Image 1 (cartoon, rainbow, N blue to C red):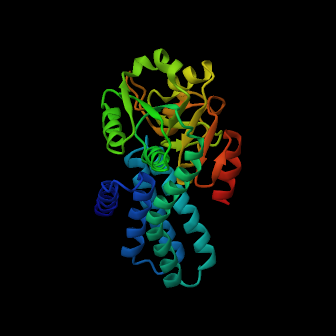
Image 2 (cartoon, rainbow, N blue to C red):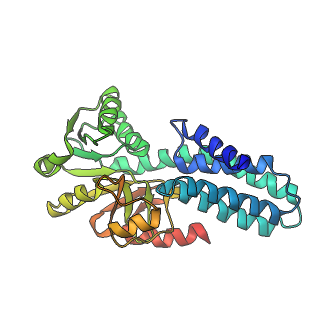
Amino acid sequence: MEEEEQVIGDFNRWRQRPELAEAVAAIKALTAVIQRSQASTMMGLEIELKNASEMLKAWDRSSISLSAGCDLFMRYVTRTSALEYEDINAGKSRLIERGERFGDISLKARETIALLGQDFVQDGCCILVHGSSRVVLALLKLAANNGKNFTVIVTEGGPKKTGMEVSKKLSAAGIPVTVIVDSAVAYTMDRVDMVLVGADGVVESGGIINVIGTFQVALIAHSMKRPFYVAAESFKFARLYPLDQQDLSISTGQEESSNPARDYTPPHYLTLLFTDLGVLTPSAVSDELIQLYL
């Protein structure tokens, strides 16, 4: 129990840092396990890390980003264990270095996505944003800094009203922004040129799991022939294959309720995904996942 409290405590401390994604916070917590470990073999260390990873995933089964971060780092642990099976100290050093670098990788991924995605922001366009995403904010700020003039419509994001915070950040960057209630998306879509959202997770089908309401925004955009873009880092690619909303509850442990936190948007409603691996079609995601986990 003491180790579990330590692992969860480390994760929560890292998660408080605004620049770090939840997946990276999980990797940082697992790196701390390596630093504390008294294991004398790589196999012993791998077992400790597997247990810590399962603790983190069990702590919040609904977090796709947390689960994806744990799985990705554990895949790297397995590869390192095979390479350094005779030298525990070399293996530890390699893993600690990799874990510590993930913070920088996270920030660099965001910068890469912003650079790729801002090319799709046209002068005079109107962008609808749903949900709060660091990478979406970075993309829009970069486009504005590069002299592009555009307006943003942000959904309110009830009941937590996350859209209000997004609106403040965009306004502070000099970007004209309007907040609408979530139920006004269809009414407003005529004025919109493109939709831009982040993602909690990108699944094997190329679909996304994101804040509740994303699916209905995608449905409306699709019916009104508006492009629907997703900005997401590759460490959010998850080995899940939900087929519908009920599958999402089963896959993530999210209890079925009248107020779920996330929904699943199938790939055929998405136009493109802006990632640090490039601009991808939804169908290309499975290929990239295979490469990540090889």
